[in-house]
Length: 293
Image (cartoon, rainbow, N blue to C red; front, side, top):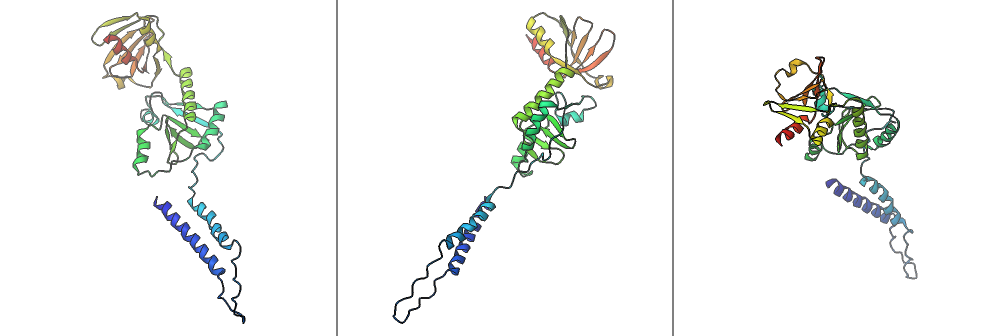
């Protein structure tokens, strides 16, 4: 605000100076009386001279009051975009536990690449002081790294639903809803087709940690448990040797799913003795609800 007031004062001073110059250059000479005693004709001011001097200052003043141009983030033609993400975790958390949770990457192609290529050049840096309260609110009150975009193999942007962060240079930016929606859909389609699996069971019997056994016969409850999607993680027996099993699910097809207590993880055991550690999402929450009824 002080800067704007300063500019206004400066403009007025410049205009005043211009008018003063115009007046000095076109000042009337002192009246000279000829012999007849009549005053000499008045010297009239050159048409428009003062006005021109005043108006000549206006463009410069207007230019000084213009806001600085927005700093664009993507300044080169978009040739490639890669999406990097973790299922159920943001980028920072996923990177911290990447020895266990797999990272997924998807190359954007076809019509999706064309659409994203039109949106990315619109992104511009938010002009905020990193030390200010407002900037801190944007940076930390929103998850900015649900997905990571790698543009032309060198520009790296982390994005959330509302804001993003320039990993390869620093700075915040607003994320257009249409951009997030495209990225979110691509990642979800990839996960559905290439990562997720669901329980293949016509019957399910569940035993809780207190030894209570429950045959799941209600069609809605059975469908709910079969709808939970899981995916394999990279883990060792040593990592879970102290975990307590909250529920054991007999799928009546040779498979058994052990779900760890207060966890989204479990072990899927097969009839041949092999097994795999899995992220089973909300399965424990659903079973808690069923057993509480």
